Image (tube, rainbow, N blue to C red; front, side):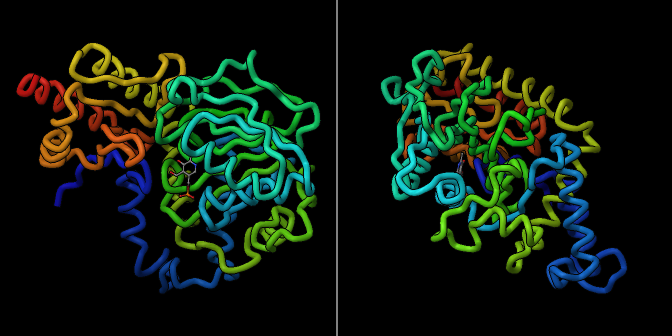
Amino acid sequence: MTRKYNFCAGPAALPETVLQQAQQEIIDWQGHGLSVMEMSHRSPEFVGIAQQAEADLRDLLNIGDDYAVLFLQGGASTQFSAVPLNLSVDDAVVDYVNTGEWSKKAIKEARRYCEVNVVASGEASNFSAIPAFADWQLSTNASYLHYTPNETIGGVEFGWIPEVGAPLVADMSSTLLSRPLDVTRFGVIYAGAQKNIGPAGLTLVIARRDLLGRARGITPAMLDYQLQANADSMYNTPPTYAWYLAGLVFGWLQRQGGLGAMEQINRRKAEKLYSAIDASDFYANPVAVPDRSLMNIPFTLADSALDKLFLQESEEAGLLNLKGHRSVGGMRASIYNAVPEQAVDNLIAFMRDFEQRNA
Ligand SMILES: Cc1ncc(COP(=O)(O)O)c(C=O)c1O
């Protein structure tokens, strides 16, 4: 069996050594005679696994005790509702930045509960750039400002953190753990796990403790940050196996040298791929250079009639899941932490060869 290179946007590549460790431990976890999947979430064994994962995440991101770290279910999409339900009262005004498909979904959900003020939108540029901060129309009384630091579909990414008075809320699904982050700038950070964190089924929420305890009366218990924090994310049965695997990923990141080391590799990978695209008339990336994502790189072929052949031949070359999101078409290479530099080198070599044969 040979593993291929997986460029999927999510569920995404996991480090091979993590999968090997999971394989080794799947039948009998560390001599305890059972799999992590079969453990009670209240057992000392699993509580130990859970606490170690949280400690390692706190270490990687330098998260202080003034933040709660929650290991939840429901995906980032459930947080689109949990955020307004926890951080705003009925009829409150909340600020949102619209930078693409995921922002739009967050906005749509927030509108069920709040008056949403869209402070800026990238729509006029077809979401190919982050709207300049100087033009943002901030509310004076917003309960929070929500934005999407990395738009997984459009491939636009903030290289900066907005400086606003209201608590900052960020959907970091496709950028968390790709580089160091100053968590203290944020009120709430959330992320679906299935990109840089672990398998699908787990959602991380990092919330400043002074923002807890404000959930609306109608908030479902499962979505109430304070309640989940009080229960150590075990108000009900948590996604135990995904939590364990995320813990293995955190350990792997520490062994790589932490997020500073990952950032260097990630920048190198992205720069190579963008340079190859920009150097060619055959491939194109529409995103403004300063706003280009390090993690998700969409590109088109000059002749879209060749898309099908490109995808077929890339799969044959061991380069999987390069098809762009159904809403935008074209190609997309997602190059998260677990996608090795060799995968990017092979992709670039394949792209050059394909161009020579088809241009
Ligand atoms: C930025 C962003 N937000 C939200 C989501 C939705 O995540 P989930 O499928 O975990 O609900 C995704 C999924 O790809 C995403 O990339």
